Image (cartoon, rainbow, N blue to C red):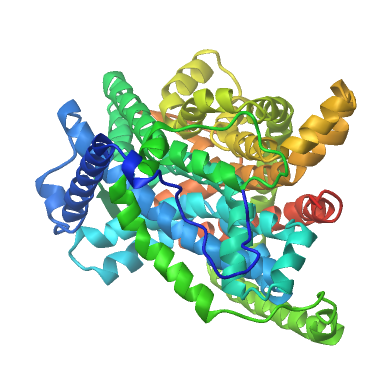
Length: 584
């Protein structure tokens, strides 16, 4: 893989296609049929999303297996729409945080807060807003659902991209500077390719994380507002409410089919394509493969569709031609002074204090100091669960992730299975959890805890796989030549190589566990309910009752816990990875 064009003039093609004489016609036919079917499905789904809101009452959700494909289409469209918004958010916000110290002071703590805010916390304040934007139309509720799914997808992608940009090799940055690359061209030719392997695996995790909260985003119930959108999540919620195990099995089976389809048609081709961006000097003997990626490379139709991108890139290269520069020595002179940095930090602190005062005034209109202290106690209980579960998940999934990441053939086989397990909604296990815990008279405070990490442990696995797969082949071969084995190999090769990725995965897993506590600390099966003592149960009950001061208090306390935990543990580890474990 070549990140940079030395002359800065000619653009590398997006796809390498075969010579015109070697392109078979059947490849164009298959590609055309696939594009046509996908386009028809998208148009049909978007048309249904634009119908009047009253149509939801006229055609209520039914547990009919023949309707499940249509419901699955609506769910997939919402999730890919949220994924597109998450990518746009990642490319703008994460890049800004990585390149600007002033922006980083605001963006990184904001991401810490946002990843900890439960999905229902967003829905509480956004459903009315989006319904007001599109009154009387389903599109308003669809936007609210897409936004809720976005909040379960965006944060780990942003952290992954931010981590990649902060660990760029210095020599590659110097090359782009000396050849006069503009910021936009540097982003396209160096930063985006370097971050792509890790970003692709985090995109897969984001899709799976979206499944985990799809029930909350499609079966919306906030106070007196109750809306049920057609989808697999709302089907699952209705099946659980009716104790219909057959319908639950249909939902899980439909979810598995959908995951298999978008893995074959979307993620596996992207993984095969992104492998060319690995930072290494020696080509790997084992590379990920994809039948669709191979098909696309052999078609005329895709070459025609992608031709405008090549023309645009070439035009930008001509417009952005700059003279070559010397070594980057004068940059430090243009850095902001320490006084300006302190002033900016003070302004940020004042803004946070002003926002905190407003939130405190809103909360204290109906609550007392005793309520606040009790809420902090609930936060301590949830934090204890998060710490123990993340430690256990790390011990299990780091070795497994390294093993998978170093074996592309096994990664291909296990990729769809890992996506399915990561997407498996905790709601499906609620019936078994309720029956077992109630039947054996177990303590819900302990035995509901594993449900919290059920969906978030995969952040660790997917990021470790990305880190292991990005290890340069020449580094792995050198360790083999010098006879580095067993614990020495883990200590000097594997763990340092995957550590920056692990920190990203563990950070998002801990934030996601706080988020998941709202779903898993209160579980129901028909008329039977179990509740664990914790902050998630507090927020869930307040949201159900429409008690906005308690919702705001719960979210504020959760945000304080997450920020403190990240600042004490994860941020220092990020700094260590940036200073000591960069591939220079």
